[in-house]
Image (cartoon, rainbow over all chains, first blue to last red; front, side, top):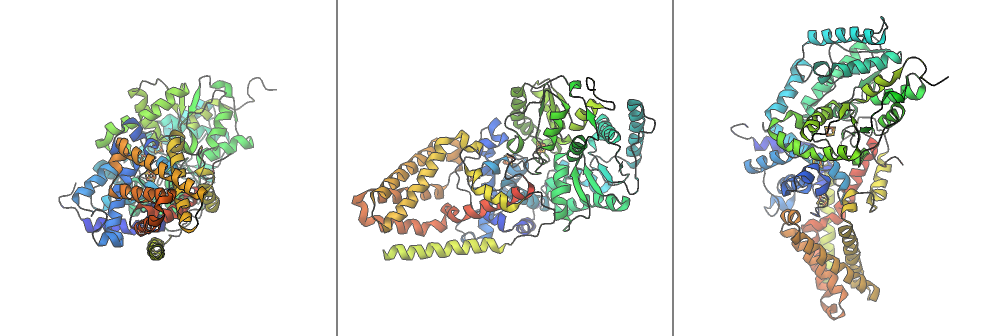
Length: 432
Length: 187
Ligand code: SF4
Ligand code: SF4
Ligand code: SF4
């Protein structure tokens, strides 16, 4: 927290984010309270502070005071002062994963996360962004990835994984190409993969190998994450996106494929062009769409009998509700296992795991994050599944913590891991 | 009746000014290629998304949804009743007034709703409910225009301004989710 808070700067940034939609959303709440139960924070801890409309109200009060005629006359709203800034911090950073479930359930149709993001942006401009979240952004800006993995470590890890892939497939020519000029696909990954989950990266590589894809990794610009989406500093978010755009230009690839990460997909597919104020000269796709296509076109074959445990699917908010991708992962799982069952609710109605909105990078709110994750734990328990598939490494981290905390005893996997484990390079057993 | 006309003009002018002010913030150009149709999303937001089974918040609170519908219907009937004497309109207004009372009781009784509420929430409810009740009771015929005028004067000053912002807000939410391919949901 800075010694003096620059309120004027905060208001300037807040104002700059407002468009017609925001002005409407900030003027429309009727305090009906029907959004309360849509929020996993409120469900697990039914306090006023966790009601989405309460969080919205704090932002709307400031809007009303500073940007409406009645407010300027001092008749409505509340000024943005130190107390209000602290209330904002607690509400929009500390009690919200920007999952957007409340907006689907709002009586009026208010896009609440938009308002929360404007408040986050103002807080960031006032130097009130949680330090650990900002450190994650700074890592990306300084080192090109959010975990400050060195170039050497990245290259060595890929080299080692390539050896593993060759051993696993028995193909001495199996590759994890690095900086291949003119490859059709540039595949980007979450730094958690080389750092903690190398087998998940190997699984993706195995799928590309089986599909005989013309693909590459990049020595620079390989991290798909963008925590600028969460500190809401569009300049920093744009600079991080620029890493990917530059890698695409340097390697001359056709399609940027985003590995399994909800916010990474939303950042590159939806927000990146807005941050950089221009349409990308290439296509941005999720690895899920690519794998779905491989299966549909018969470029890879899978044997669903390899997975014998009941499987359920978690819908990452940034991929599904905010990303518009709900079906490819389902088609993939339908083909990959005979034991797939939905959790309830699902698709756009699904609950956040609790780790969204940068919560995993904000230590101060860990207790709330774990409590709010109880909703997801309940969904998983109710599904009866033994395997939870989550196409998002952020979610996987949170789900792993929930798994321990709520004693779920489930395995947690990416979609690529499910596909890689079911891959058959000869006709599946039992087929002619 | 003159009071109603003056109050109506005030209400319309202020609401128009507020909407124009909101629209003056402008729409930023969007550069990410759309995955779906903003128009189809907006259409869905005003149709399928408003059906009682489409939203968990309604599925969990069917009584509130029903009360909300009755309340709005009752208020609309009360406005019509100012112009046309009709038993049917009076009956609908009575239903609306009852729903308004029920929603007021809910606001006071539920802790999270009570905490969320401010003076405007109570003023808005009381004015609208009183207006509907006035339209429902033949004996109150003489004060009906005044109840109507009071409500019209208040509308742009408080949350009843959602009578216009509802449309703008829902349109934008629908267009946002439509563009991203979330609305309308896959069959
Ligand atoms: S965006 Fe998600 S976490 Fe935030 S208030 Fe809405 S439902 Fe709750
Ligand atoms: S459902 Fe919408 S209108 Fe009702 S209190 Fe929540 S945010 Fe406000
Ligand atoms: S962590 Fe996962 S579930 Fe939670 S908001 Fe992000 S994408 Fe959604």
